[in-house]
Length: 234
Image (cartoon, rainbow, N blue to C red; front, side):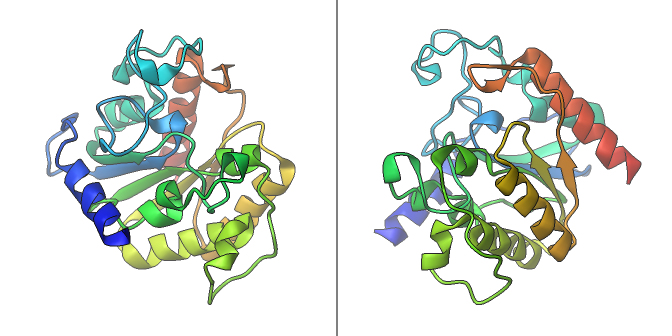
């Protein structure tokens, strides 16, 4: 079953529209996230989007004024920085660990499962942790190596494994963790501690306007501005 799932993931990436915002010899960026980073038609076909054109079934009737991919934070970042979009591996509702909503097993959509499929980026912009905070997932204890599958049901060890895997699997890529607003303090603080441990820079968002719990056009512009400002300051 796992081999079939991995085959479908790989196949799905060949069906994603190519977003050419710059020449291919420029910086290549991969977007790695949850619903905040989705848009119908720009993520693997196996993944569920939240953002979509007006009237799409995927928005589930939620009120949000983001109707075009050009209004998303990641498109705006690529546009402002002249990046080429390597891929957008985002999945609505995805968690870092395996603990999902209604106690479901979210391993298939987990960041730790999808981390193997990020292409060949120069930069990885990763916006994780929101659903982990919302599902009620326990943070567990800090653990820096030798993780087990049981550890993946807790946020701290699963986030630590994620960062370690990204560092090892994409040694030439610059990884930035983007931390959402309005998360539980224990999840926010855990991400900061783990980022510092692995030497991964994090961008702490602030003042993000949201509609139905997701960034509005105004919120998307704020995320993009804060990400661009942080990267340019380094």
